[in-house]
Image (cartoon, rainbow, N blue to C red; front, side):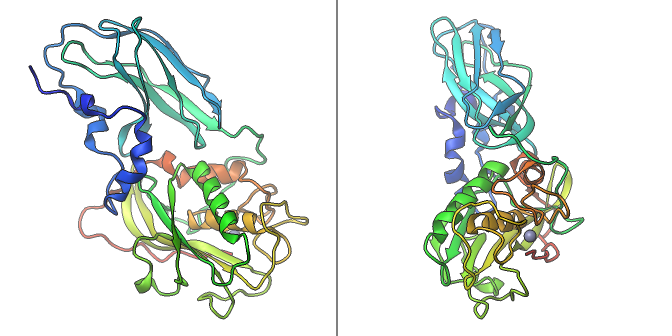
Length: 371
Ligand SMILES: [Zn+2]
């Protein structure tokens, strides 16, 4: 008998659940082991039976977040008990397993298209790995986007980069660890931060992991907590490394980046990022609409929406001036709207994984910090 093909060693169940653990194993490691790369599954030995799809029904091109759209199908050949995988094409990585099922005695299977993060149309396919007795079957790609259940304001093109000309973003194929400094925070601050981070994760496809509190104030890169990328710090103006002039109540942005590459070329991978909030300023908690405009300015916004705005900066977005209904303009709303989501897609997982540039890694230019 031949060795089992790599595909057969793929653990059962959707592999995206394993993503955080694996990505943690090394700071710069890509997120999944080679065993889930379909490129390595083409070596089934002496297949006796040809596996073919006899039916495959995809959901619509656009599916709603939080829904459970089904991919139904059936195979012929060796029918029963075959593992079937739903895979999504991740740029710079390859096909990533995002769901799995096992065929019944009639060869039928049902997969669920994941809707946990929002993105424009991305290619999906169904793959039945080879076994020692049967060939592999791979479906043609089918394109699907995930949109919020609510309707969006504005246009998808209404976004900018925080550092014009530099594609600053988190490496979406790593878990992004974050901490809070609650030195000058009021009650409920951590709860709002967790909800704002959750919303950023839905909008970008990036997995953020809370690592607890820190006393770090983000002024000193040398003493940055080692296992942390993002620090959200509530500080008094005296404690803050960055002043809060006029009505500015918060700052956000990448703090340090490494030059890397992705499918589009050179990109700056954010390795340290921060959100600074003036703890002396009392703002309503939660995610309330602002009365007269918005933006991270005194008296105009709630703590949760300020956090969302600053986290947009930390993720690499700049302001969108004179547009209404956009988080990244000063006319904030309580949700990320069309332009925000368009921009957050451009700095998120939809842009795929990053790879090192050849030669020694070099620091990207220091990015701006935006209020
Ligand atoms: Zn801003």
